[in-house]
Amino acid sequence: MTAFVDLYTEGDTFLHRMDPRVKILGVVFLTVLALIIGNLYYLLTLLAAIGILLALGRAKLSKTLYALKMVLRVMVLIVILWPFFNPTGTPVLFHYGIIKITQPGIIKGIAVAIRIACLASVWYILMFTTTQRDLVRALVKMGLRFDFGLALSIALRFLPTFGAMVESIRDAQRARGMEFDRGSVFKRSRKYVAVLVPTIVGALRTADTLSLALQSRAYGARKDRTYLRDFSMRTSDYAALALFGLALALPAFAKYALNVHI
Amino acid sequence: MIPRPIGRADKDFFIVARDIKYSYGDGIEALKGVSLRIGKGEFIAVVGGNGSGKTTLAKNMNGLLRPTSGSLDVAGRPSAEMTVAELAHHIGYAFQNPDHQLFSGTVEEEVRFGPKNLGMEEQEVEKQTEHAIAHMGLQEYRQVQPLTLTLGLRRKVSIASVIAMDPQVILLDEPTTGLDGREIADLMKCAVSLNEEGHTLILITHDMRLVAQYARRVLVMAGGRLILDSDPAGVFSDLEILASTKLEPPPVTVLAHSLGGFGIPKDIATPEQLVDAIMRARGGTQ
Image 1 (spheres, rainbow over the protein chains, first blue to last red):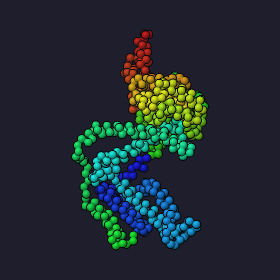
Image 2: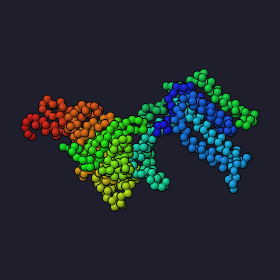
Image 3: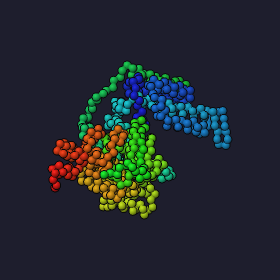
Image 4: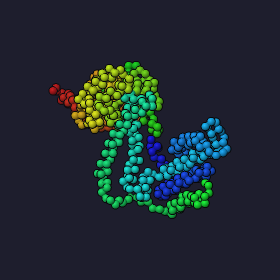
């Protein structure tokens, strides 16, 4: 349950030490890059580069695969379905009635799947090298309102708690003879009322207590907040930011100013 | 005092556990081999510090967790062959937090939920619901939304919803946490009458006074093992064992131990026993 929510992996690599604001910007740059590249081979190059970053950050293979499992399914689906819906160009490989499959269609499907892999793994770099705390703090430093930042960190903090609560509620109902894996889909989803109601009630009760606890600790007493830990950009952070910037700027310049097909 | 397991065959018992072990997914071994036999009509308290394996043992009994090794028979059948729903008919488990199971619009519907899940006939469902509501003294709350009730009453509803499935064994997981003295006495009165009807009561608790007052057999858990299986007097006469489980004996037992020099025995569990012992020590009668 916890692994599902918090992907952070303890480590002391340059990626872990990098200023989280630089990491957020870098990941955003690489995301845009993955979106403007259309060519399969350039996308594969980008994926390889992200792979090198993962390796440098000492990502655990098992955890990475676990985190990317959902995306893998989507990728497989896209590779299979894309050619059917995008039968453009030549050569035509297969044609029967309305079903037509072309080589560019297949390659495009693979490219889109690789693009999704790029997007998922680049965000995974951010998630596994940055604690949720630093992530929220960086967003606040970058201009997010503090209350929103607090709400976000509380939400992240309570996800595992609610996970455990849902587990316990499921057990309590199973102990009353409820069989969640029996019956039609419709019947099964109706059974989840018995889990949903106690979960919502529990969440509301927790929220109520939490807001009282925050108030009793003088939340919102001062408008100008001070911070115990502050970020400061080091030379290496500026260098990293410059590299991320170039990684996006050069291909973008080539595509939009020089009209190079990438 | 209690039906000793020695000399009786396994088939005479309702629950028979042979060296059951249980490890959680993260590799923590919460049960390190527990063997015990529980008969019909017993009143058992399971005590032990937090993390000693009490709840894990309970969840193994009703199938929410399955032993990683060892065997467990319930009602003469291996529990491994039975689904949680089948086991729920034999072992009713009322969770510590009643809010984890209450979801219906009225108390009556809440109580009806269990027997309906077990596929009982309409008439039987009504009979059991009626019986459970009457037993827990919830008649006047029948049409009330359970979540609006006080904690004491919510707990009663959750217990009613378990006994409505007519299980032989009723497992109560720390049923008195957060209740005041009167609510505790009230709840325990219901528990005693269930026991008198022939149900086996298993009470998981930290409250040693409760143990002293109600239980006829005490299972002391520590570090995933069953370290003592005896009557309350036997447990309280051994303060060292209790101390090793981070549990406090009831004050009257501590007093009795300090009075040891005056001829007071050490196996005192209730004030009445202490009074008796003092009378005997004075050599007189009341």
